[in-house]
Length: 181
Image 1: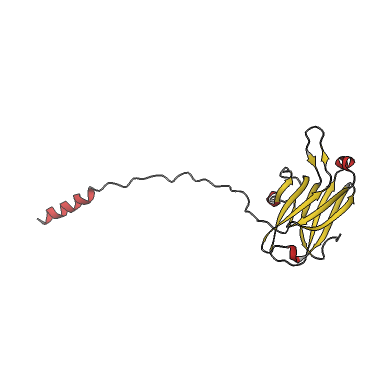
Image 2: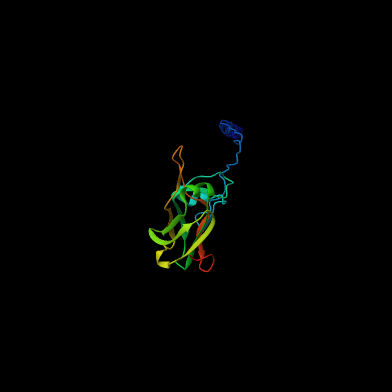
């Protein structure tokens, strides 16, 4: 009797199905690009993430470009943590080819819809302008919108494209760095 019980036990365990075997799936590396850096206080258009700062009227450039053409009202966004004293600085070029058509240009700078400053009678060539920013105009821990308004732009005769300035860099620097206008 004892032999039958052992035999039944052996056969009972042998009736279970053998688990299926599957090979590991092919392993792939997901390339998601560079880590996002988020918005900051200043952007140079040579930066990889420069397009993240653009709101409107700035033409997209090639990945290795260090500048961008603008239309009449280039608009940018920046993230500022504190409403401390800042300078807003913009580096740009008024191209000789467009300046021949427009003549002297006036630039108005608006921060969050409020006039921050202006520069008038600008000639062709490279410009670096900056204005002291009153802390009351800054939205702390939020996006701050800068709108640059040009009074005149070059209008291409063929397709009507409007070209304003060549923008190299813009943003906020701690008060005391840059030129005050």
